[in-house]
Amino acid sequence: MEWNLITWVALVIFLVTYALIVTEKVHRTVIALFGAMVMVLLGVITQEEAIRHIDFNTLALLIGMMIQVLILSKTGLFRFLAVLAAQKTRGNPVALLISLSVMVALSSALLDNVTTVLLTVPITFTLAKDLKISAMPFVIALIFASNIGGTATMIGDPPNIMIASAVKELDFMAFIRVLALPCVVIFVCTTGLVVLIYRRSLVCDAKVQQRIMRIKTEGLIRSKPLLYKCLFTLGVTIALFCVHGQIPGWTLESGTVAVVGASLLMLMTMPRREKVLELIFSKVEWTTIFFFIGLFVLVGGLQENGVIKCLAAHTMALTDGNHAVTTMAILWLSAVMSAFVDNIPFVATMIPLIQDMGVMGYADIEPLWWALSMGACLGGNGTVIGASANVVALSLARKQNVFISFWGFMKVGFPIMLFSIILSSFYLYIVFL
Figure 1 (cartoon, rainbow, N blue to C red):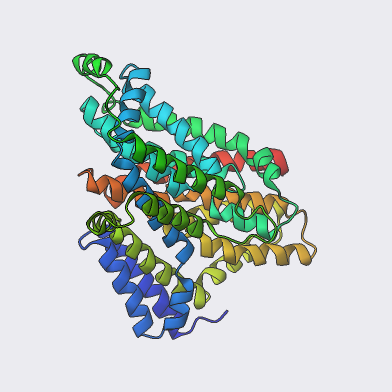
Figure 2 (cartoon, helix red, strand yellow; figure 1 turned 120 degrees about the vertical axis):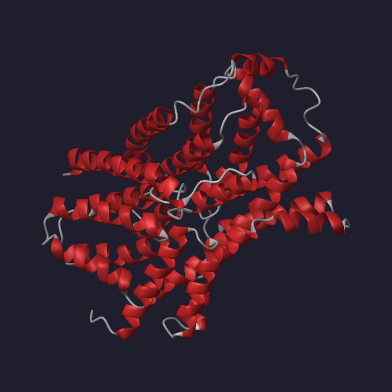
């Protein structure tokens, strides 16, 4: 591919926008939207193409689940679960962090990462407040757990769903058989590293622990009728998440399912209460929603002008057909790229390239699919914008006055991400190469 002026303009706009996001001098939503609009104004991407690249399914999923979680928070459930968790672990912050991380990893294997984060992160803020410790280690640990857990199954992360759709031989059990073991090892190592890094913050005063143990859980649920309605709609939503895409002829996406659950819950709880509806909608993380819109358009500009495809193709050419080198190149390229751009367009670009390699008589391409999956999913732990769950979790943290900067997250997340990819490299080499 020959790089023309528009291609270079697309790359420069993206890099400048990204650099401004990293500096955090201006709110990242403003920068992302402005960068996206500059691309449209300069003809890097047309209005129609920009709209086409906005992933409305992801936006609908975010909005639908945010509304359900906001209404659920009014029942007092998060406070109840926080106290219960604290008492079960006798107020030990390390035990709490580990138990919550396990819960999130298991949930993310069966649910969308964003949904899992929206349901669990609010609990951590209540816990941290009760124990009088920083919520930062918990938020970071849950982000890592959600991305690692989502890697383990076919439905845990969008890249896996895309790969499974393209390669019919890779079914639900194939993903578990190949990815579950390395994900367990990576999860254990990652959680251990987080505990080690934040060990000084995970200390609680003995008097606070004793006070936690004396809290009575009765009465913490403020409205049982509302709780039952919330749990019903959440159960319906989760059930539909598990079966959507599995039933022939049923093409509902996860975003549609989330909005169905949210609208059903609002119909059951506040059909005529306009002021309450306005309050709920005002609490939706609209800055996060519009940040994603800007990001989708920015990455769309790169994709429309062949930047991502060119980078992937050049990497494939550099391996010179060596099976082991090609597998490792895909793993590492996927991880690094997914840490800085949305992994969905990158995976969409890589899938036909790998398929073409199979058509051209390339050696067994199965390891390439697993390398793409592990790299794209685990790479999300590298930076703040590496995965949707990261952005959502840190936006929730800001609401609670817990500020984690781009560099603050990256200096922990990127080395841990690289460590997980090193483990993945050993695993793929031993098992397949």
